[in-house]
Amino acid sequence: MGSRLMAQESYCVVEAHSGKILTEVNADLKRPVASLAKIATAMVVLDWAKYSGANMGQMVGISPAALKAGGSNPMAMVPGDQISLREAMYSMLLGSDNVAAHALSDHVGRSIASRSGGNPQSAFVKEMNHLAKALGMTRTRFRSPHGHSGTSTARDISRLCIYAARNTGFLFYVKQKSRKIASYRGGQSRKFTVQNTNSLVGRNGIQGIKAASSAAAGPCLALSADKSPLVVKRADGGTILSPRRLVVVILGSPDRFGRGTALVQQGWAGYGHWRSQGLPVVNPARELIKVPNP
Image 1 (cartoon, helix red, strand yellow):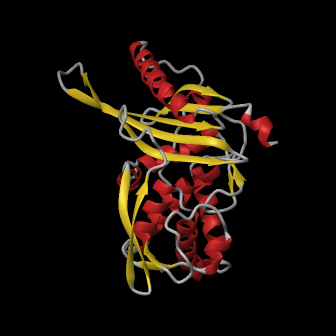
Image 2 (cartoon, helix red, strand yellow; image 1 turned 135 degrees about the horizontal axis):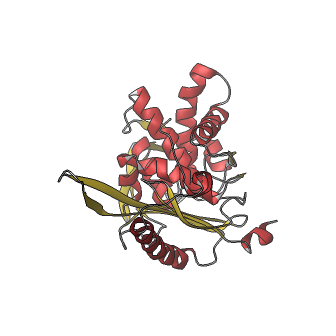
């Protein structure tokens, strides 16, 4: 199945504030999305911190299960190491750190499970899927906090990215090209510089969001790119500021960064043309993505 899906690149380009889809190919094809699932992990953590009043500076421990989960461990953490929620978020989102993702989901999952019962990891993944349902991601099923399994579509991940990009804290994490962070072993600080695996950050207004890759999913990329708001004159002489943000999601592309660069340019051109035509919408169900704030 993996090779067949790799031959069918998927992408979706949408202006986030209007919800206008500017171009798409295979946008509803259900497929693995690798660690783009970590966008949902991050939003569950941030939403939990907001509503529980939790301090992102609090420390969490690395368990043996975090290492057994496998995958990326750029900080070479071992069981017993400590890391703050904030630093774990940086390592997960910039360096695609699976061990950090497991630590975050285990900590937050324990808080969720204390109210709902069950296994902390299961409780956390259930919350990821609750978020997906609330956002209208009807073809998505998350199965882990790091993206080892589960499926989604380019259109559904676009919904998730629109929601995530509304959160200024999330955007602050993902727009960093690199970040100096630390974990602790035996009370001693271990410094580390995590590099953003999204090489397009900082170019053409691009602020992130996440690069991802796996054997099943192939190379994937989610981008957010802003331009300054348009100033629109009203009939009464006043003005309206119209914010502009592109969200680009690419799944299974052999040249995700080249495709991402081209789609950002194509997206802005398409958005300008759509505005010049008077913002026409013929079929709202197919042409627009409306993402609620659950």
